[in-house]
Length: 267
Image (cartoon, rainbow, N blue to C red; front, side, top):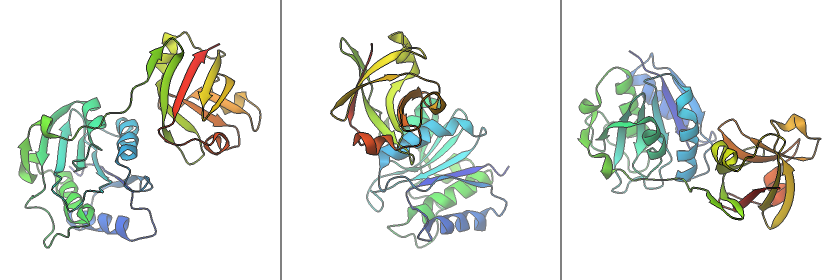
């Protein structure tokens, strides 16, 4: 069976944590195929982990096992979950990080694996990625059923994390910044369908209120439609409205951060 395992953490690469997690998986299933989605989630940022998992999961083969470990509550009474959806499996702490992707794909079954008989012996209080989540993923990849790995609980018992929703007002669309990537591109929670609702198409002029500034920006397909150093407004690869600077860092130039509000209106 050997299902694909995809890892998402805030561990980074300086320490041996990522390598050890993979070592545990390979010790249980030497044929396991492991992909790193990212290990550079902002430290302890559950919201960012949930977002990156949400926008990424559907590009992987059916039956992929996602292990998401951004776990500021490790060692507490929080549950450890295995969620079976229509097409995938999601494993990680019950802190909301699994919820948006799981709901999006359609939750079928939820299991509490906190005290699974398949976790490592002498489990630590601080490294459940190694001692609990890695073994669960490995045994699942070998074909064990979720019911063998934990006990079933109600979906309503999961911690729910929901992304902020933009609002359509007389002033325009009021939204917020939900992610800033390594290039400084500013991703908002305003999606393509909401822009279409106010008749915004490629070429439309937009008034943008962001970071204490108001400026005009034309909606373009990509950076190549503006000059070097100019602001580009576009729909990103995930389907959300984004602001970038051609060969520049928009977040730094506009002095903004995650959670900052944005107001967008058609001119």
